[in-house]
Image (cartoon, rainbow, N blue to C red; front, top):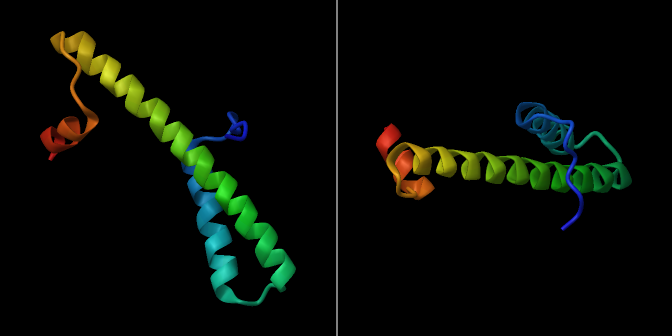
Length: 81
């Protein structure tokens, strides 16, 4: 996997991704620029996934340290509702 950009926050990456999607959907940019923006969006998605994966691992570690047993992330999500 490509090296992830570590200086960007999840929120900032998501905001940039939303801007890219809006520009592409608007249809007023040339095809070549759309392709470049699409590639940038793919990288932002990878960055967001990496950030979320790290957050999930941290949550699992916290859950393990609290109760002694590792709790799958799916169960943590169910408990939060």
